[in-house]
Image (cartoon, rainbow over all chains, first blue to last red):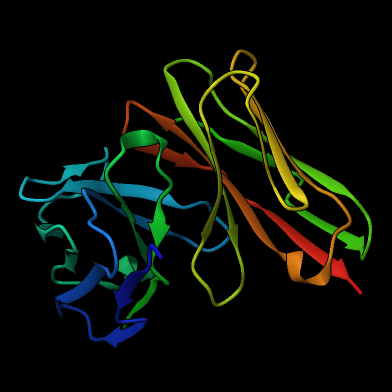
Length: 117
Length: 111
């Protein structure tokens, strides 16, 4: 149980393109979803937290207009990298947490490797 | 940004060896400590969630302890097997939703 599906796995696109990444909880309701970014040889950095039906909470230094997050339902959250540039190239990974609060583990997707040319 | 540190960065052991890693975190406003195992080409898998000082959790040959007063957690693997090879991540949780991850300990178990 507790499967999270993240698509796409790989994206290569031209500078200026907007890219949407989907994160779905397949067999549980995700009351909270988290989006992370990882640079090479660094730790996972929390970008934003989203709860279903409400605006995402962004971490300091993360541009809201650049990284649009929508948590439309209890099973789906999307991250859109708008007008992507080479510096946005990175590994992005989502996680979902079910009801029960902070004592519950996160369930991760497989991640998306984004390369902007 | 809070600093969560893991040591060692990498570890090479022989099959059958027991090993342990450390996760250090700021203890102020601490909420919970998570351990994850991240195998190559897979998604991170939750191992333990611990909240109370003195907590000890066990899952098969893997166990973890938590000291919230001094801000550290240990992960132990007894009798390492090649399938234990992975990166082990800890994440400290503050204010309910703010997770801070360490850089991980990469374990390689040689047959």
